[in-house]
Structure formats: structure tokens, C-alpha cells
Image 1: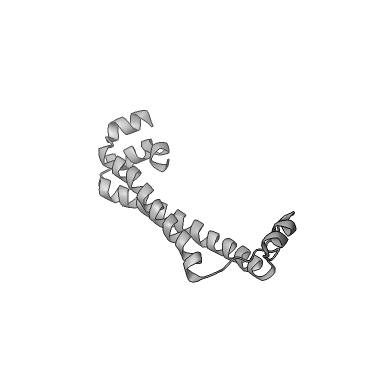
Image 2: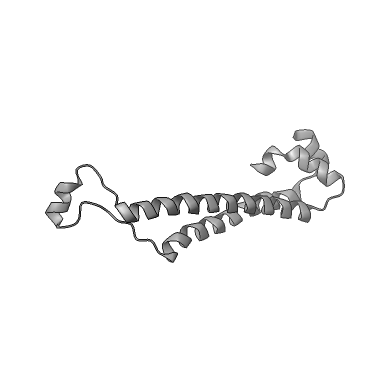
Length: 119
């Protein structure tokens, strides 16, 4: 969306002589920073919630019958490990990087005059 919404802006920048590769790097860097901020916030909030539920457990209404029937506890305690805390962020960051390449590659086909006209 960042490329589609800022087509006119990118057209002006390209017409000023900035190489498309530098503009593509800027788009990838912007995506990386947004993803990094989101991942850090997600790890902090998700980690805090996981630690809370690891300590106190997660309880669902009506689970007592199920727990008694199958001889399990009535609370669920999530398991926290380095793998569980890092697998999600790694997958998200890989997909963010993959998703950032399409808009960056689109900049190579962008003609400055057409971009300024259509934006």
C-alpha cells in the first residue's frame, strides 16, 4: 500500500534523479522497521500474557466436566520456551520481507511522468 498510495511522491523523487534501487531499499527498510516495531511490541505483550497464564493458568467455563471425564486439570498452562517465543516472530518477519519485495520491484517499472500524472 505504501507504494500505491505514494505513487506521485515516488514519481517526483525518481524525476529528481534518485535511482530506483535506492527507493526500493527505502521501501524495504520502511517495511523492516514497521515489522520490527510490531514484533517487539507483540513479543512484550504476548510474553507478558503467556507468563501470566503460565503462572495462573487459563480457565474456560464448563471445562470442569471435560477435565473430570478425561482426568486432566481444569486449567490450561501454556508452555513457554525459546522456540515458542521465537518461532512466530521469525515467521512473521520472513513473510514481511517477502511482502516488501513486490512493492519495491514495482518501483523499477514506475515511470516518473506517468506516476506524477496518476498519483
